[in-house]
Figure 1 (cartoon, rainbow, N blue to C red):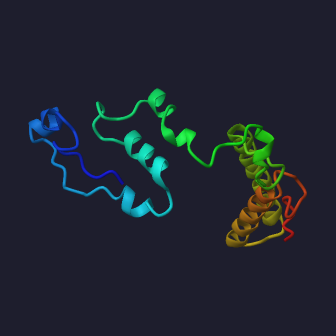
Figure 2 (spheres, rainbow, N blue to C red):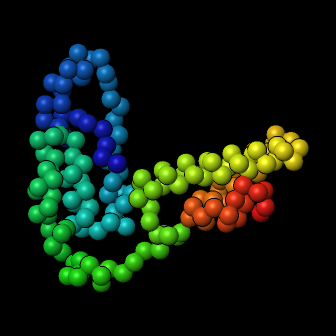
Figure 3 (cartoon, rainbow, N blue to C red):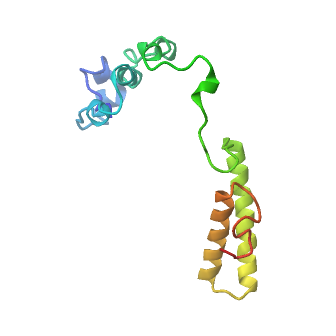
Length: 157
């Protein structure tokens, strides 16, 4: 997206140890951020991205400078009251915090293991056991971690 580093884009680039000692060479690639995303990301946002992604650390925009960027003060502006933003339907119970997602995956794995055990007890082939196990896992995750919804380890679809 930002192209290859070179002496034009990065003052002192040729003095970097691996470059100077010719231990590492970099093939040339042109920046593509503007051409790839210029139609989707406009003006101040694209400019801010380019400044934050600058290869030369001396030219790269700091986080504190970024907060004063015109992007944050141009239209459309964020509403004064956060409730005006509305809500996003995340599915399930709408709570996708990383910790809860990891916990849900652990629970889904247990449901999956229960389904595999039940499938083996029914005398299914290993392929069918794996299929039942995967189905139980996916249905548990889609149901938002509600045991008994969908397969729930019982092999039902």
